[in-house]
Each structure stands twice: as structure tokens, then as C-alpha cells.
Image (cartoon, rainbow, N blue to C red):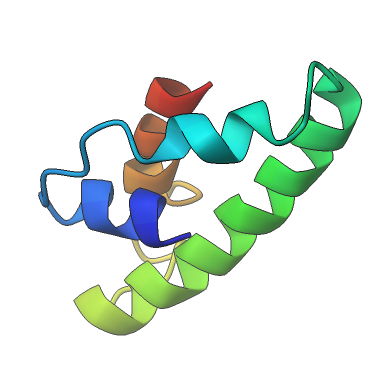
Amino acid sequence: MAFIVGQAIGLEMGKSSSDYIQMYAGNAALLAESLEVVQRTSAVILDAITGESATTRNAPSSEVQDAIAEVA
């Protein structure tokens, strides 16, 4: 979650997500399930930081989705 939130607010995160992804050893289904939880939780954190909810932005956390797309 730190990677996603950091990336979304403009911090340079480097390659810190690669270790997390490698932890799943090719289990795409488990990784996808985990990323769903990460996305939802990151959206809550970003909503608190920005003061906007996903519904206010009229999209489900586009910053989070962009950051997750980079990881995946």
C-alpha cells in the first residue's frame, strides 16, 4: 500500500514493488486478489489525504488504478 499511495502522491518509489510481486511466485490469482485489497485500502488512505472520496472524483481512485497498472 505504501508503494501505491506514495506513487499516487508523486513520490519516487523506485522498484520497491518487485519484491512484493515476486512473493507470489507466479500465482496470478492470489496476486490479483491481494491487489484488490491493496487498491481498496489505498483508496481509503488517498481519500483521507486529499479530502476527496472516490465518488466525489467520479471514478474509483484513478490515482490508485494508475499506480497499480504500473506495478502489474
